[in-house]
Length: 182
Ligand code: B4P
Image (cartoon, rainbow, N blue to C red; front, side):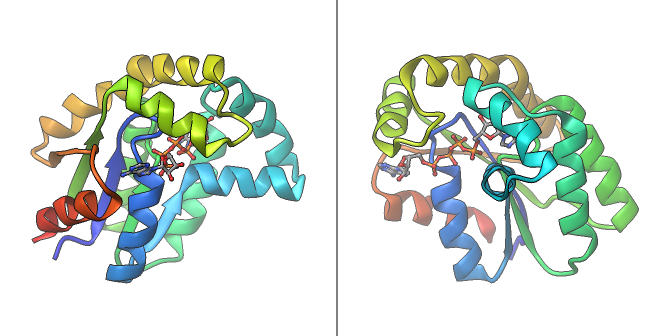
């Protein structure tokens, strides 16, 4: 079974929802940069204070900050993992490639979760997190298109990417993803 996984997709596609369940079912470490950043904000750390305003605007937090978090988690881990919400731009993808080379590990599958904007916006508005108002959501979708969507061809050209339709029930989508793990 493939056990070094990356979840990619627009905000609200359900990456966190699926990643959480799959990590428990397959005993993988779930590394959500969004959750880790929110935990830093909650703790009021220097890092959290730097991230808070950026996240509230729907922008991406600095690469250096996110990379420091991911490096710390992956360095101390040997088994399978699931990266959710990272990388979010080409610079992060390249830094991740370098980090994994250093660690002698490699990505086995990139799951792209695809969903229409109308459904994304509906889901995020009903989630109701502080960064989930309509203006910020629309801005996050633009940031996704400009900075994160180029990762689709980056990973597709390496033969790692599989797309999943992210409409339907949580269970249906989970079945679609599980089929790809082999
Ligand atoms: P994230 O925390 O990564 O969250 P997300 O992309 O908004 O949502 P996700 O796709 O995980 O959707 P979810 O499961 O919650 O990012 C937040 C912010 O953190 C970013 O804007 C950025 O500022 C910062 N950040 C994170 N990573 C970064 C990085 N690497 N670099 C720089 N900055 C970074 O699902 C959404 C809603 O839909 C939920 O309410 C859920 O219950 C519902 N839902 C899920 N599946 C459903 C289904 N099948 N049917 C109906 N509803 C469903």
